[in-house]
Length: 510
Ligand code: HXC
Image (cartoon, rainbow, N blue to C red):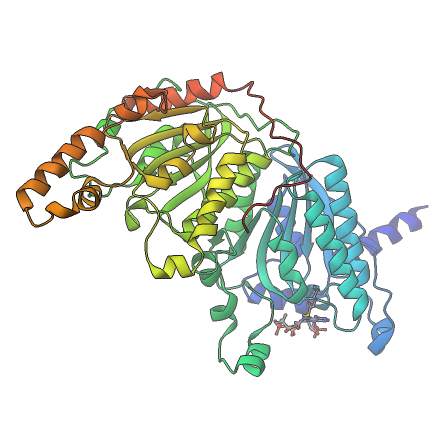
């Protein structure tokens, strides 16, 4: 008997050794942890249970029958993060470069099926060289099976991808269909085709970092939601993220004990809006002063900074925050901001996370660059996302809410549940000067007359009361009471039930 037990331990040790000492050392030398080390950091201590550690590939082409490594390049299993069940797979770069074979894909799809059946989040840690080149179509089919499950699980369980090394070819599309992608600076990159193929096809000389590093994907392409300096930081932040997320679209949103007083007034907010309406202020300040302990998990913070999106808590319960940022392009909505906002709003709506919108928006960005780039359809994405969302929607207009952007930003007309404005709000079709220049074009040469008209327009519209008189706002609130009013609104909306008409699915303007 003892011999049998010892042989199990030996086989386990073999599997845990991955691609062997030399390859593990090379992994460490690059500043990367191994797949199992990553999982240890991500999961609660001693909670990880591995599946399929003895699985080997079945390929016999190109001499592969002589090279079999148990685990076949991916470590899969489940564990807990702060006590809640999470499924995880981690590509093991030390085994065939983490490349995906038929059996490797089956390990992942088994996990995806379990996560979906048992309604718990799944996290994928990527560090891999794409399809197992020796396997051909078996590997391609394997990817297809993984992709199909990503799509079925979308909107049912949270799916998170962390890119911690190379991620190329087939490996990029699975993360692209998950809810969030995170990257590690300097050690990770993502692209469909690498620098060599790019050189052959387009004659461009580009490094892996320039083509698909964390900087490119968090700033320009917006493929990645956030980047971290190293593996440890990335994994610890994933633990923090999981704490914000419900386990599925039918699970309650997490509720954690909170100490921050929900009745807390913040008098400094009464002077947040500068006297000059064209002067910016940092919307982060309002977010931090409203949510529990200023704890804000920002998503896509380096991309389209004119809109802020992220997760926070009020009275210990998760909320999604969407806010125009006057510090960047005066908080204008352009195509990038609209797409960023829309995706986040839809994420929150999938998972029953109430949305709080802080509005200070001068409108949509004019210009050929925007119009040629499809602003109409991109802007419509945000409009569509807010309009279809059935979660509690609370909106606070702090200053400008002009034109179409007023309507789009979770206005009453798009089923906003509670729409508040600060007394500094200005709700109008456009700014006073532009409005007067259009409706009094004939008087443009008379500067005094125009100045008087502008003053007139401001008096009439540069306030929240016209909208409040019509019931488009539920109340005009004191800035210092924002946290209290939002917290009370969320309590009141806890039982909200709202359903859209039955449909197979909608046709959001992609
Ligand atoms: C089999 C692979 C592999 C792969 C790497 N390895 N990629 N084995 N299939 N796709 C193996 C190497 O042979 C090597 O094995 C080990 O992993 C480490 O690889 P190195 O090249 O030594 O490492 P490094 O220099 O860091 O380069 C990493 C890399 C490079 C950039 C990922 O390996 C690479 O370019 N790989 C190929 C990428 C690729 O073109 N994949 C196919 C994409 S097509 P040893 O034994 O020496 O340790 C695709 C289509 C799917 O994915 C489409 C689905 C829709």
